[in-house]
Each structure stands twice: as C-alpha cells, then as structure tokens.
Image 1: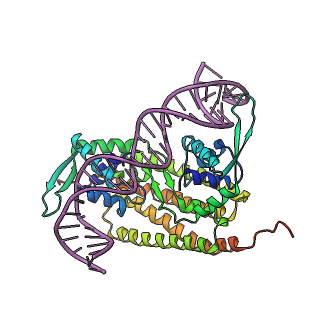
Image 2: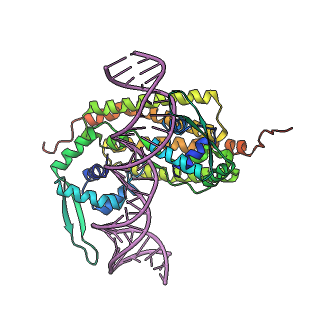
Length: 181
Length: 181
DNA sequence: GGTTGCATGTAAATGGTTACATGATTGT
DNA sequence: ACAATCATGTAACCATTTACATGCAACC
C-alpha cells in the first residue's frame, strides 16, 4: 500500500490538491493510521496523472503557485477498488512511547509521570476532535466504523493510563530489593 | 529511536544473540510496537560492540555458526538510560487494514466480513498469548504496565469489531440511494 | 520582525527491508 | 522430499523523510 494508492483513496472522497491531501494525513481522518509527506505526495500525484488515474485542473491564484486540484478518473476508481481488494499488510506500529515505558524502572518517577500525563492529554485531545466528527456524521459507513473504533480504543487507552498511572509510579519509586541486607 | 537503541533495550533484559533479539521483535514483548530485521540488527550489534556499549561472548556450537551472545556493558546501560530520557517521537501507525476498511463501501460485503473476522481472530490469538505472559508475571513493572495496556486496548478493539461487524455489513449491503427513481 | 499557513516541487540523505549466501538439524 | 528452525552476515534496493528552494499574506 504505497503513497499512490493512499492518494487515490483520499481523492475518492472528493477532489483535492496535494496540499490538502497532506492535511488528510496530518490532521485528517487518516492521520491515525497512515502518513505521507510532500516529498512523496507530489511525485505520486504526477505519476498518477501520467497513468491517467487522476485528472488535474489548475486553479489560478494571485501571488501563489497555481493550485492543482486533482480528481479521480473512472480508471483511477477502478485501480483503487482493485488495490483495496488485496490482502492487507500487517499493521506496523512504531511507538517510542511504549518502548520507553517498558523500561520505566530505569527512569526517574517524575519522568514516568510526565510521559504518561502527556499521553493522556494527547488521547483526550484526539478524542475530542474525533467525537466532534462523529457528531457531524458526514462520513461514509466504513470511515465512520473506523473512526468509532478509534474512539473506543483511544478511550480505553486513556482510561488505562489514568487508572494505572499511580500504581506504576509507586512501583518505580519503591526502593529496589536490596542485594545486600 | 534507531535499531541500536532498540537492541540495547532488549539486552537490558538479559544477554541475547542477534537471532534472539530478532525474535523479541517478531513474537516477543516488543513485537506490538516496534520491529527490526536481521539486516539491521546484525550491523547494529557490530557497531555497538566497537563502541563498547555491548560485549560479545562467542559460544561454540557444532555444525552451526558460533552463537554470539551479547550483553550490555555499564557504558551501554548508561547510553540506554540516556536515550530513554529523550522526548519520544510521535507514534507511527501504518494500518492497511483500517485504510481499506475506511472504504468499505467499495468492497463486496463478504470481503468486509472476512477482513473483520480475520482481524478478530488475530486479536483473540494475541490476547491469549499476552494473558499467558501476564499470568506468568515475570516482567519488570514498566513492561507489565505496557503489556496490560495492550491487553486492554486489544480487548476493546476485538469487542468493537464483534459488536459492530454486522451493522457495517448491513450498511454496505443495503442498496445505495438511487439517483433516478 | 518572526512564525504560521498557503502552495508546489526537487534532491539528497536516511534508514531500513528484501534477497542472497551458507549449512546442519528436526519435524512432516 | 520439503519446510521450518537455528544462526550469522552482506549488498542491493526501496520508499520515504528531510532539507532546500521560492514567495506572499496574515497574525502576533
């Protein structure tokens, strides 16, 4: 599942510029499970264009580069549907947060507390945004399903951190079992 | 947080060979939030060795390459602790599953069902293994905390999929709103 | 006066995976 | 017979990120 397919997916929700596609991965509905940067999006869009999978309409703007608005062609929609039918790769999660927390015994308790508190705040912020989207309820069924799954999972994660934070801090604060009496 | 630090982390739990470190990322406690392949682990171990962060003891084996058992040096432990103090990078999740499911309306309902069922089975298998580890309870506090968070989150995810599976399938099966009467 | 947002694009660097090379042992 | 497990290592390849290049407008 490369950036080209990712762009096709974003465009299936409606026409967009490269800049707007980037935002879909940065703050938008895909930001929680996929990402792409300008350096990969713009070349992908050009490739897609020369393959006839997307169409480009240039919107002139004063004192700014023309905004290039891309939209899916029938061929592009077909190609997307096809790609979606493939067996998905395994999820790949890279969480430095969880890795670091695995070694909480090597960290000052105050640092463990800060790490957890930051993360709780992040989950709570994300949840607020996601719940706002859920209320608006403009998403197609699959997107709503995925978003609500995210809400359920993040809520559990935040609650877990809130409920178990103090116990972990106590454990890493407790004097280690002494080697010598 | 590169492969070198990752190896240092694994080794802080006890000496291990490159092969065993790979297993920690493939099936072991880190597999859910970090990954590394042989092609990155072996060079990392050599670099770590020449920097004096790990020590290597060769265990001769009959008819197999010598098993190189690595262990952390004091300098290595220091370097790990240091790296753990750095601000963690943002989590990076790449889930083709969630991306594909976001476009459920483009897929045959039977495919949506299969996708979800596979995922439920995967969560249930993972949960069984993780709960087994939780019962054994040999992990240091941070690792146990992270593992139990994983259990809570996976359980929520599995339950969400189980509870909402049929509703999504019904939605994508329902005849689309007709354009012409 | 500096940062952020809008807007596109390229090139170099990165960091890693995949595939290859080697080979015995154990299980199916 | 064939695949999987154990065991290490290298090199080619890959996709993506980061940094750069350009520049105006709005906000603080």
